[in-house]
Length: 331
Image (cartoon, rainbow, N blue to C red; front, side, top):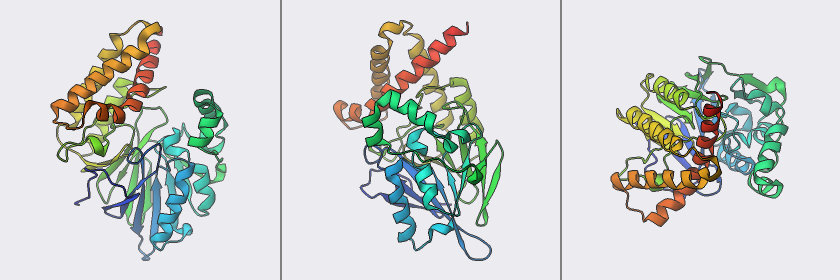
């Protein structure tokens, strides 16, 4: 099934990809940084059922409700809300959205359910990192979800949506509370943060500039490789990335991601001195990514490319440092 691929930046908050899937820009920090997805599927009675994959942050909720209304649907037609994991750029809007969708069920990884039912630890942890003022401005209020409205989705779990099927796969590596979702109609996988990041601004001649995400605190390189390999073994046609948009799955994708994960690990292991590690890691990771970008034919200036990559480089450095400390502590 032919789909629209996010190969170029867009100022539009909504993009129809085909197969009843709409990509929504969540507005997280900037345009083109984080996406969520709305799926429309018609059941045997001719009624459209809706699922929303990822919710973005609290500020994304009005945008999602606007899209539902613009399409002529009622909020009662939304059947599932499905964050791939509980990091707040993916699940920060869950509670507020569920409050507005009276018939929806929250579908969540078994290890993430408790954080949606009681998000106080998520909120406290984020405030400790960002400070209360920044947290409130960026993420807003985290609203708890009643336990009776929560469905955990273990590995291999399936749900019907209209006349299609959603299959859930446990995919650790980025986080232990992470799953990915195969959509039977489009033969595409909603990958969350498992299969990397590809910002449209960095694409070259329609080819995504894809790189792994090693953000804190549960990055595990071998588990990430295993999860990527497992998803690719399903022979999907598309990956729906949260960061950012739809990409076509190509034969070289597995090798490219595996090689990049190995390189990131090698860079981390080359910086054992914890006292000076972060800045050195950031610069080494940035140089590696800029070199790859130039080799792929990237045309943005170094300053422009750094601006798009800077936040992820910093987060990747933090996650690699935590992984390295954990690895060294178990020797």
